[in-house]
Length: 540
Ligand code: NOJ
Image 1 (spheres, rainbow, N blue to C red):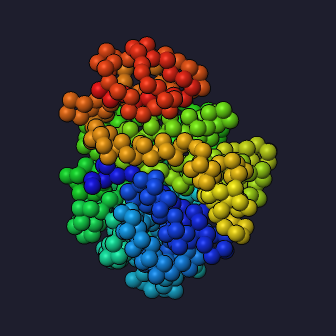
Image 2 (tube, rainbow, N blue to C red):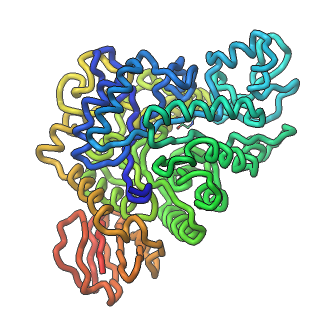
């Protein structure tokens, strides 16, 4: 099956299912829930990092790329998970964090101890530049007592690797070979578009230094080398690059098959439409016009350039999309389905983030002590330093924190919602008693809606393969698009608001059939009235 037909499910292992009652999810927990994932119908499961790590950034600070963090289990547990997944016809995608390693990684430790070979694994300079770390503060830190500085685009414990050194590249390619030998069929590459830094590092006040290391031609070259040396040899392997502050032009280059780089890219532009002046730690209702424009330009241009999008609303770095785009107090269920349709019927490969299939919400924490994420804690301090009151700063963190999506999976209405029998590492969502898998499977309809969407992708080639065009004329409440393939068309209309509205359908689709919608519409007329958050897909 081509990567275009697949649906991928993301698991944040720490929060999925705890089987040894230490409050942290584990690999046997994932294995135990494979029948659930099979029932949902997903083809591949992406695991956020499972490697040894001091967990300063929840595993995105890797201390050893080819072992399993004891917190999650053993290599035997991993092998067993792989074997059971195979039985269920589910493939596994691993997260490759290749821009940086934990400062506890032996490469960094050896470098610190004076080993020249390993010092050249990192980006060391006599003088720091003015670049800003993505988690706040300057992006350089003192390298022991050498008088030098090492670059860390993320946390101070995440040291950037020197991809210009061929030995570093070979080490990383060996990591991929190791996991490929274990039967891994997917790789998600963390912030892979920042691996190519300028050769001469200069101050770059523009955009916190990003132009000096983002989407550089050399990053494309490194990715192509990686492709040719490793996964490019196995056509079944699916690759997705996570892109920080990227452009459409670059994403076409990363994903156009002729370039031999990656299958698809995650970009985040559509999840910044509620950032005031482009800044994350602010509060603003989402800008629908901007959202639509982004979907249209990415949809059309990626299609024209033979590029491929990874489609998603949620992941472990984002607050739940339901809380951002939907009036969840009144329309959580229909809203969940509308968001799902707008992605799953779009042009690209859809990703489901754990809990999305049951309409999980942000946890609704009441105090700063409930948060553990390094980025959120830093941001809170920066907001206070900038003169915000504690109350104001808390309000922003509550809306924006990455912990919003990292709370334990809500399995049932037991004490720790079936996630564990001990207190979890991060608090549970307040709505766990009402929103959980057991209840959803018994009386809910979001899970079945996702099942349907996944099935449709396999049955109607226009969904996986069709081109993309904006549905015109633009409507102030509706995001509409048309997919076309070999004489078949699919019109998808999504009302992003809680007010009803009317839209005029094109004549050609009047004899078409409703493939899926969230209000059980059986028939329709040219003047179509869309209910709050209604989504409808017409095939003709
Ligand atoms: C992106 C990951 O998704 C995020 O969780 C992490 O903090 C950064 N990259 C750094 O690895």
